[in-house]
Amino acid sequence: MKMEISVTEIGELINQIPQEPGNLFEMIRANVHETVGQYLSELMSAELTDFLGRGRYERSEGQSNHRNGSYERRFTLKGIGQVGVTVPRDRKGEFTTQVIPRSKQYEDALREDLCAMFLAGVSTRVLSMMSERLIGRPISPTEVSKASKELSRAVEAWRERDLSGEAITYIFVDGVFFSMRIDGSIEKVPVLVAIGVTEQGHRTVLGMQAGDKESASNWRELFKDLKRRGLCGTEVTLGIMDGLAGLEAVFGQEFPHARVQRCQIHVARNVLAKVPRKLKKPVADEIRSIFYASSRAKALEFFDRFKARWETEIPSAVKCLGNSLSACLTYLSFPQEEWICLRTTNVIERVNKEFKRRTKPMEILAGERSCYTLLAFVCLKMELHWRSKPIGKVAQNLPFFKKLAESNFTQNC
Image 1 (cartoon, rainbow, N blue to C red):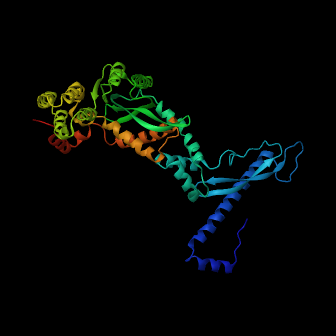
Image 2 (tube, rainbow, N blue to C red):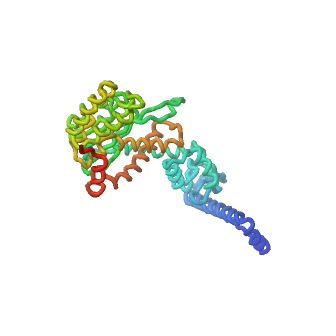
Image 3 (tube, one colour):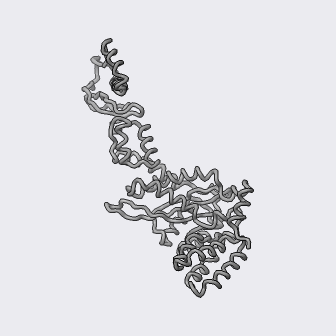
């Protein structure tokens, strides 16, 4: 339909612009929507003409199929919004337009944008609220969820990717809990995560799967899955983890050439939990001296002093530290520039923190697949950040900071 406007109406419109500038743009948008809708309708009409092999009102012998009216529908385009179109039909129902597929309500580019916003942290409810303002029609949370489900194939391909080309030497492992909707009820579901470090110091997320972090069999299943996908178990030399006895035993069985580094932060927390409040600070200071010693001999010397001072007052704390001391000092057998990264599971704790930050707006995940989709996005984003910060390489390239770290964070006496 052609828009017609008189000179008088143009003058009135111009006079209204300073008071109500939005009216002008509203008219422009309405005209754009109508024009685009007509263009798509005519395109589909031409498509039907080509399908039938003759134009409107033309007759052809031997042809029993004809035009059979049309129906109205709406379609949403990126950058334009919702437009009304007229879809032609044939009498036999054999014609299917390729311009606007019957099952789609919006174009693929818009679906991709919805997925990107969802992955970036915008919840389905917020997206539904924003959509009417941005594209002229509300998109329900269900539609957003359906659009994001199309990412599942890519996520599964990433989770099952081949690891044979990765020369992994260190593995960080830990678990994190998420609230998921399982069979109509809300459940706390743990997700096991493994992060590998290559010979060049680059970190990469090797795998993640749902499972009880306290269960040795679940960890064994994860490790076997990594090896099934091509991870060379003989090249792994160190595993950094918390103090779960079952986890350490399974790791040793699956990676017999690797040693175990127990997270010093987890051990320190366990020790301090057995210490009275008034003694926590001096005890924590001495534990820090042990863990940040310049050599194993110095660390054992500091522990002997710790034991002599505190064994009478807090014997359970001293015993707890003594049981874990050897596993906490494994990192001293590796290159010194890597010590600061190998002492704890901070590498994976940072990822877990990012996981929780991303899922916080959602409160509850729709299920395991939804969890994997979001976690895959977070992992890939973290890997981009890690590329510029390889483990053990920054200290070598920045001697000033290496000297500063040694003078301030390493015990030499």
